[in-house]
Length: 377
Image (cartoon, rainbow, N blue to C red):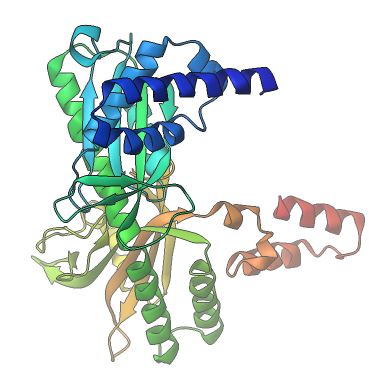
């Protein structure tokens, strides 16, 4: 970014502020000016220089009007094709405007949802602006980033310009899908700490329990679970299941009121379909006294990253030492987890040590060092 471009960008924002002062009611100007100064603050100068001042003003004003009233925890979404005669600005793209509480994963999750539908994103901005609202949700003040105090809400203002969508039904579907993504993000963020607490409760229960397992396996498995909660796993959903027999077959039935994250609202009669569809010989493994089931889910993550979720199943044992159910956590291993050497990760470190032992390579030999490098990378 050159100094010249920075000055040109500042000049554009100043012109928008002047237009607000001339066109808005006097009592609204101060708030709208603070909003404008933050709305375009982090946009690259070229993205502003290539648009007309009327379109920049109209786009900002549309988002400003959308934010005028918002009830607590309720996102606002507007999906439309701007026409100058109706919205006061125009674009060759379909526009998505969102106003919601600032939360992790918002930008990634919404972008991922659009790309998953085969829709290209041509422009995006997503400032976080602190505001105050009254008891009815009316926007009464726009603050600066350094302001603190009662009723200060950090709100995310997201705008995406995407491939033009002319079919009204397509626009309605987009609106519905965006609300669904926002709901998933809210569930994951709100239940992140409860899911962490649930994992810690499981760890303490297993540690105190006399399990029908080799002691080394138990300790290493619990060490892995402790590693997981040390910011190495993004929790997305949790369910507890009871392993019971129905019509002569083992099924995993959801434990009542156990769902958290994206599974918070799962119906109480839910039966694990992924388990039911397994071959009988594989389902029989559920009764085998081992502790962890670590694999990939068949379902893609609805938040954060567009990949299949990581599945972490922990078998539950009754007092007789029999498998009685499963605690199931779905999420994503953190980027930090993928960069750690295997020797720093429980379970993997045992596998790496086993491989080296089978090869009978001296650790300080050329071949031994090469194999350690291969395992680490």
